[in-house]
Image (cartoon, rainbow, N blue to C red):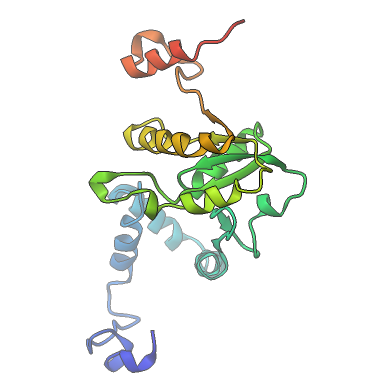
Length: 217
């Protein structure tokens, strides 16, 4: 924010900026940690006390890492996953299968699939899912860019890997109906029983999908 938009002491709206030693440093840290997803008051306390118990250099590295990731990480202009160079590592890798694109909702889904080591194609991140309740339609997602990537005929298969919930299924159905007329093979990730799960504890939807996705042994 430009300095001329700040009030006296460098704070917004003319209110004085908090002193470096105003007695609220720990409270502010707990408040900020508590805003992180999945971090409750007790977890925020554990993290804050860990930081307090660490040396100044460790705290500095943490703070610098947060600043660096905000300054250096951006969306890949091709697949919209996270990138630190012009394009992400997957799009830059010539060894990846150029004929297969896995469509996911968020960049974190790319990381989850990459951990499996089972997929060697490309990705396309939608940036969300279709959700009429939230007024999110195909126009608010990276659908147009996906269709552009399919235009030259290089891609022969699109794997739809949105979550198996209402919004994810709606999005997958829409994409399937949109992509199939282009002559591209469309597949959907199978969903069913987790490894190590018990049938008696499975809900009806999960068990039903497991039956539908059965395969020959």
